[in-house]
Length: 199
Ligand code: FE
Image (cartoon, rainbow, N blue to C red; front, side):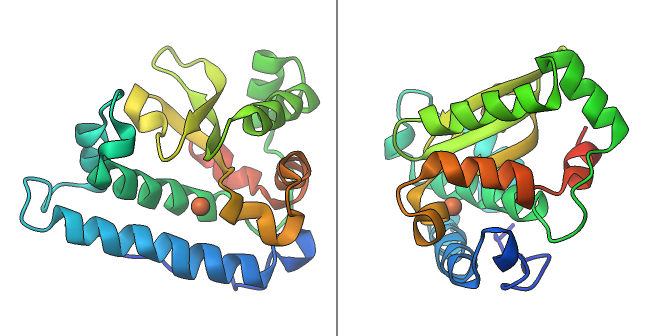
């Protein structure tokens, strides 16, 4: 089915006081995400993927050794990644639901340790990519990082939280300070209710 750009689940200026400006969301959602949708639709037209679900396109076109060459994969995966990214942020309360807090503490020692490890993964991703909190096939929570548009679907993992560390996500608000963007993302932008709902 054709990809469609979802509306942001909040106003473009809703996160401005939390460290993600209206200008960033106008560029990031209205231009960058839209480009993945439009380019993805052009590339899948007339192919075997034309009527497949977005998840099937991502899983089916992932080629570990040829990510850079795979136009359909790159656009489909980035469309999926950004759908998740908008959903797991929000202007509302930032309380971590107790079942998620418990799982993070059991897996990483404490919520603060989890945040440190997640931020380090995102800061340590060389070039463009994503940092993730995933649940793997055994049910264990793990922190991962991926290059470009590669995402947890490629590894049969459930994505609970993802942070875009492409420069387009932080350069307007944080310039080159990716670690500060990541810390702010975890402390002010994440909607932990939405993360817990993905468990
Ligand atoms: Fe992005």
